[in-house]
Amino acid sequence: MNYNPLKMKNVVILLIIFSTFNLFSQDFELRKTPPINSKIIYLDGTSEEGMLWMANSAFNPRLKTDKNWKSRKLDYKTIDKIITNPEAENERIFQYLNHNYSKYKIFVELIYEDVLSIYIGSNDSDDLFYSDINRQSMGELMAQMRFEGVNYSQKLKLSDTIELPYGKKLIRPYRYTYYYGLNSGMATGVTPTYHYYLLKDSTLLKVEKTKRFLKKSKEYFQDCPAIITDLEQNIISLKKLDVFIEYYKDICGLENTIKN
Image (cartoon, rainbow, N blue to C red; front, top):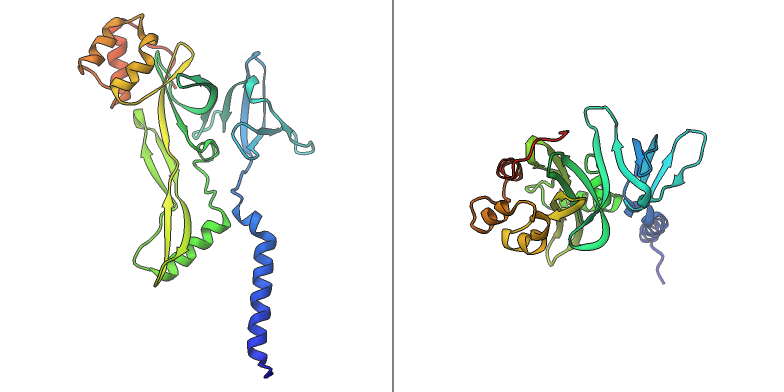
C-alpha cells in the first residue's frame, strides 16, 4: 500500500474540521438571545426593571435585576406589559393577550393605542421580540457565505423593512438554508409571517378579509351596528387600519383615547 503524506494530511484536516463542526454545531444553530433593558409591569400593578431575554421562547422570559444576581424565570401569565428600552427613542411595548381564534394567549407588540388598538404578532415570537437585532445563526452565516461563493450575481439580504400603520416600521429578518443542486449550490431565504390584530373588549381580533373577519368578530361590534353594516356593504374595509379606526370612531361617536 502506497503512503501519500499529502493525502493523509488532507484527511486529518477534514477530520479535525468535521469533529470541530460536530462539537459546536448546536451552538452554531442557536440564535442570539441578548438581554434587553426592560421594564416589566405585572397584572397586580407592581413593576420592576432589569435585563430581560427570551431563553428559547417569548413564553419563557428571564430577568436579571442586578449584575451580581442570577437571572430568574418569569411567569408570563402574571405580566401585563413588557416595555423594552423604556423612555428611549426605540421603546417598544409587548403583551400576552387573548385572541378570538384560541383560548391560549399570544405574544404581540402594541403598534398604536386608541379606542381600537393595533397589535402585530408573528409565527416566531422570538423574532418579533428581537426583530431589530441581527440574530443570524452560524449555520445561516455559513449558508450565506457558500451561496455568495457560488453565485456572486445574486446578493442575499439579512433583513427587510415593512411599513406599519401610522408611519412605524418593523425589521423582518431573513433566514437562510443552503443545499447543493446538480451543478451548483443554492440558498433559500424565508421571513417570519406577521399578522395584525385589533384589540376590542380585552380580546385581539385577527385582521383578515372582511367576510371572515365579520364571521369571527361580529359579536364584538354589537355596540355599534353601523360599523357592521358598513363592513358588510364594503363602504369601509380593513386594508388600511388607521383609516378604519378613524372611521370607526366617527361612525360610532367615540372619542380618542391615549395614543402612543
